[in-house]
Image (cartoon, rainbow, N blue to C red; front, top):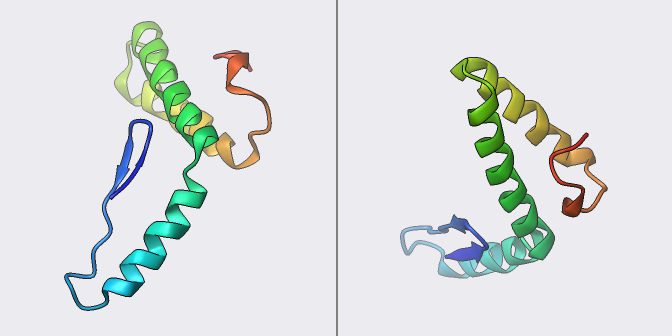
Amino acid sequence: MVACGHLRVAISTSGVAPALSGFMKEDMEKIFGEEFAAFVDWLGQLREHTKASEPDFENAGRCCVRRWMGFACWQGPVSEGLAG
């Protein structure tokens, strides 16, 4: 199990290749560090903000997805909040 803030990812090969699971866990622990944990927290804040301000469920979902997709290009600190 890889744990990073609120994120939990389970990895299993059902016992067929336990070494592979171990390597994958090590790699995922490098990927999902403190910055990613902060990003997940930010997404939670964004979700709550969007739910409160967007009554249309589908529009709220699209808004969150657009913000989430921006993570690939995300450079600024999470402390910038929901602005932007």
